[in-house]
Image (tube, rainbow, N blue to C red; front, side, top):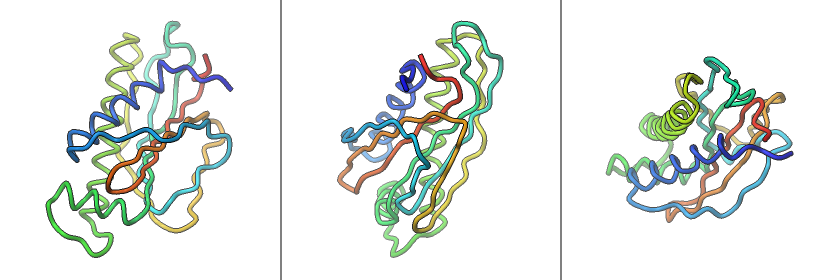
Amino acid sequence: MNLNLDYINPFLISGVGVLNDLLGEKPVRSEVKIQTTSFKSEGIAAIVGITKGRIIEEAGQLGKGRILIDMQKETAIKIAEAIYEEKYDDVTNEVFESISEIVNMISGGGITSINNKFKGTNLRLSYPSIFSGKNLEIDSPKLKSVSVKFKLSMGELSLNIAFEGIEG
């Protein structure tokens, strides 16, 4: 499967920028893989859905998709502590809110770049949803995805980008 980087890179660029801005640390890309099976969560996952606006010839068949960030519970807690400058002993609403906001900001940056590059595409975002639990599997059978792992001093997180029709 060959994926069109015109639709992947805007989210990677946005992800690095958002994490650097919020946490004061540039994440290091450690692993990139094409996801051919369901995505297995490390503990906390936040997802933003993408709906298609108008498909235009330049953008191919780009349409529905989703952006997902995933991490271990301990990493999510450390990220929330860095954002809120407070100590958390366990996952709280603030931890969920911080991870939801990060995926929302990454998605917004990526979608804005795509919509600006391919005028008239008009992709839209859903509100973030957050999931937590051990051995959680997330499956999107019609979507092709790329999963990128980033390392931070707080731990690792994965950014999974999935769209229908991103082969190029």
